[in-house]
Image 1 (tube, rainbow, N blue to C red):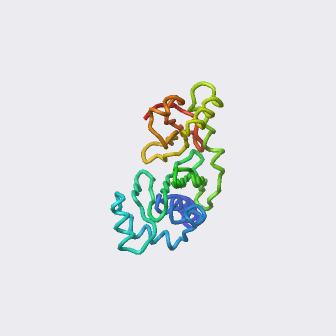
Image 2 (cartoon, rainbow, N blue to C red):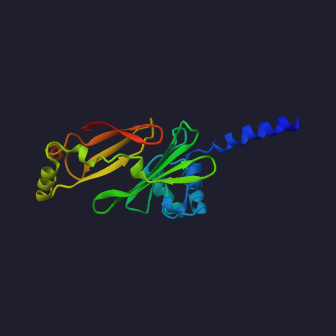
Length: 218
């Protein structure tokens, strides 16, 4: 019986360790990845805004609950959440299941002021106990130049002369597994069509990293 009990413990405990949802990961990832917020502060955000569905819900929490940030959207079933509040921009967070049994967790912070830009992009591989930090450039391919038609240097020089700015931003998946890369972002689409092949690229999930996919106009 004692041997059987030990076997059951060894089976059950790893499963329990991986039962965490996106809110659990939000509360437990390193403070440095989410605005230097402590675990206690993040638990307070989750307590007050777990049922939020819109920016109006965020505003109500900021006004009534005395917190600086709140969930604009939290989808536990699909492993996704979005945080806004007293910052210029937002944070998205999601995770993927890997074939080795670990989870890959992404925390994407987008800042704006005056243009929008990638403020932070963190990836962690989680094995049930530890968060291993991974440089996002080893997970997301270098894709900025892929959006241009014709000679890239010529296009960049012409854009510079005409004061056209094209940034690269990302959208984490709420459904599915693929990330969407967003090129342009600061001007009308008709302007970017003079220089680009599209303003979106699908980044295809490949078990711990992403592959270049289709470029298209949204």
